[in-house]
Length: 275
Image 1 (cartoon, rainbow, N blue to C red):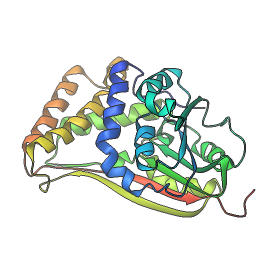
Image 2 (image 1 turned 45 degrees about the vertical axis):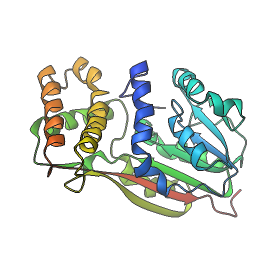
Image 3 (image 1 turned 90 degrees about the vertical axis):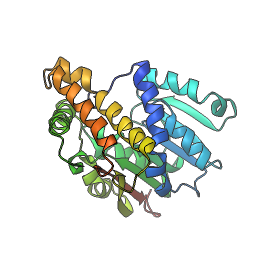
Image 4 (image 1 turned 180 degrees about the horizontal axis):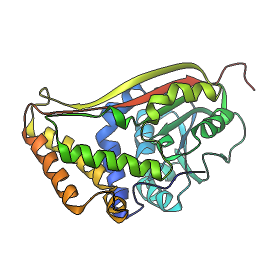
């Protein structure tokens, strides 16, 4: 049902996911509005990094995190020790396709970087709809990798990015699923659908060298999270991995270089009269 995972479940990758959530918070969380929700489910909570942010931003909500991977949940239990002890958060193991909750259990359901790893996203969204109360809120944030633009052109980055996305498709994932979010939400019978672009961008306005290195460092680490499988499958040579990293450094040091990525986010509701 789910695809293979382009990243890994190593301790290093788990630490990267925690750092990723912190880095991306200012880009993706301002438009997630769960203020009116008393019970919120995060499907695909992974190591719990986004759950921690959700708890800080929406302290009124009792949060439930669900993930298929026991290894990720073990890390989440470490990260969320205080929140779990306080009863603000609970963790469950299970599948996005068969949520272990009764109908109408939640006021809000959130998925962040999850549908890209599933081969049947509509089925997962149908399950999200089932466990939402009528009028409940759905928030989904996703990748749209085809939209990446880099200036000046970086040949190694371009070649590696094509291979990275090819690998994700080979594993059953969907690296451009963000472009389909509104269509997928409609197919799962949601209403009040709103789609927005979320720019994650570095350009000349980002003039602080430290911030530019932080920005490119985040993306380099993300790209390297797929390197082991890319090399194992022969999709990239080792020399390309090295050159790609050098091009990231050059982008950071070029004050007029542009790295323009735009994620996608959909907000929708389960119709109020729905069963």
